[in-house]
Figure 1 (cartoon, one colour):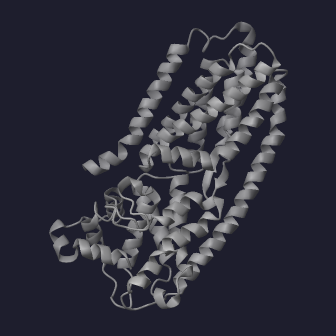
Figure 2: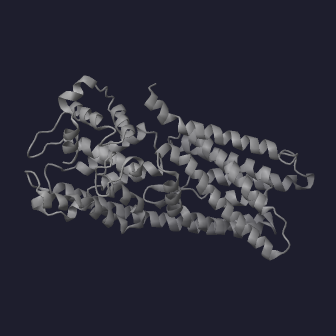
Figure 3: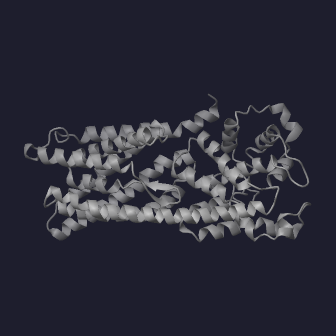
Length: 442
């Protein structure tokens, strides 16, 4: 195993190990005879509630809802919240961890979804910690009904904040994105549905304090929310089909680039797998890759199909396609983050790209991935003024531009996906920095 591969794999297993250790120590420290031996009069009620909530948590993972294009979130926040409110902190924390772990395993086994052990461990462990903190708040002394409602609200706020904060530590080591960017994007994408779930959970908690069977009343509002967001997902899928049709129309305007966007999206999958990226983030990158050139729909034919070199004014207009595409996609809330990937897919790792001159990790991960695949497809496609390069030639050029024009980690992932062994002495035959830049800008 080479060092770059080790650095790629290391963050997530470490996150899982650290989170699991913290969760275990928390449970061990908090167990004062409560965890495994609750007061005798509460045993039956505790076992009943715990069994119901563990089952509900695990079950919700099998039926996620879509809050953004190809971005999924489960309805687990309702039973997780009830776990914190209705059970003592150590019991609640243990039940949350068991429920999330069972749900993740069900997804892997029944839905055939790929998920690393590190991510599964991190997800379960973080909910142990978040639920324990929320349960401590929920079980503060209450003097009256108003205080009870305020505590329920505060518990929801603690769990809401804890969920998004710890989710950032689960995802950021994998994506390479700055923590602040991940947490802002997560709240923007999932804040609404999570907030609705906590409101349902508060109603269930008030009902359950009177009678445990009152939890059954949550079935109807939870089902309504699920159906509403599922319907919204179907509407977004229609929007996606329209935008992809527009992307195909752009490709068909030039016989030399027909199918370019489709090929770029398909090739992104291989890179994302080699980066160990799966789930909502990888799907968002793939969708952005599919429509990354949609801004060219506003570029005149005489510029888009010109066989010779563009003059300064034509080049200025051509470079506007990134911003135009992002502005078009930004009109659709489902594509808000994908719009950033489209806007910046011609930025360079060394800061010499456009439109903003971002450099290094300032460039969104999705844009860095699209930039590499876009360049590969451009170099291996025929143009009016040159024949397509061979795949080996293009890979050599990408390797030469790694760390200058393109993200080294993404280039390495592409080489792994192509099972390519780059012969360093050959770099001088094909790849000079200027060549790499020219080839990628086609």
